[in-house]
Length: 533
Image (cartoon, rainbow, N blue to C red; front, side):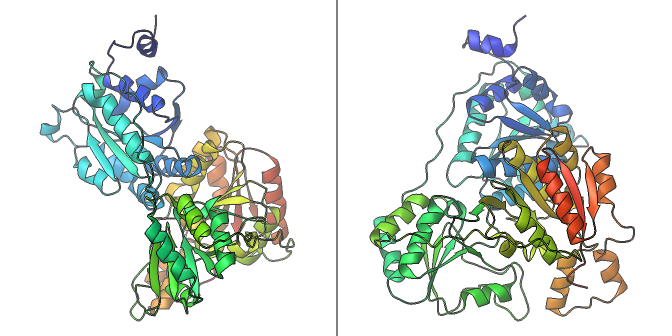
């Protein structure tokens, strides 16, 4: 007996149920992966996946893993993955990593099941204002109330997600729309292209760069990737401008042979020092820098009052073309200054955040994808890895912790021929620790390093900056992770991931070298002291 998909292919005019139309439309629109945590209202879509084996279904034990994995996949491919989430509570569980995806400009398509249209009036226990929840993180939301429009709604969602600058989109799919006949798959819809930057904007920025006054380019979006990054390097070489990038870039290509880019500091004091004296700040796919949190004595806007801000291109614009035009206008033909190939010497002795970074820099494989949620334990990582072989660096774009382990899963599925290194703080890891099960189940080539300092050290650091007490029992009770301690080796093994613990720099180097040499998931618990007590 032929499947529903066979009937669609053989007789294009025949209708199917809404779930089958949605699945086929996703595939025809270029969506190849669905990170799923379904419930009762999504079971007809689960059944439809049996007829669409090319749409890879990846189970996740928590919705925040599904949404974070979709973010990692989208960052590395530029194409959206789908998520399958259960009603408002399921979407709510995934909101934090959708927030990170929104800040990254990642294309993501959420399919959120809802109660059948005729059932909603009964206010069943799982009923919620799912439309309002979706709008908090989505740039585009559509409620599908008719199986006849299901295919078209999903095609529009994919186009909206993929169009410049990339965004989270959400389709709310009531159960009766999924199970009812009368639907047809819809053809793909062309995504909105990036906007061309006007010549007058390029000329204005070029004039600022020709003043001879201290200037800097602040890069974000596509500007942190080849070939735009190399063009920005040529502009810097021609004008003397400094190359900076956002504190948390979505995807930064870096390493030996690429222009070296200085990330803007996380702390307001550091960022203000980096920008001190800059008279012209040119934004290229980046926002004007502001502090992450308010401070009683520090400004929220970090650019000096004496500095002028010029926007060359936003993330909705054609950033590579804008940089090309700017380079042509400036006659920037000299090559960019490239990062030299240099690695730290493998350290010995005590394992600290600094020696751990040196080990990573010494051993990082060529073509690696580094997912960085090391937080305070990652302060030395940029310097230690700057001259390593070329690699990609993915960061915590929206500041909502619990991103690293899911992001690594999505990146590994997107690029199965590249090793993924997930550098994860212990407190952050516990938000989405169940992602390790997905690492194991999908046999993903991910090496996870848990930098275990036994505390939420970043909050102790912030307390010290604010001048609040760090000695009281509430501070230690709420920010400490040692009563009881966390055994990440046991946690990983319990979910099928081989794991070990490193207590010295030599131990860490040996275990990291072994993990890189063996494809598949691994976890190393690296015991490092906290920088803030």
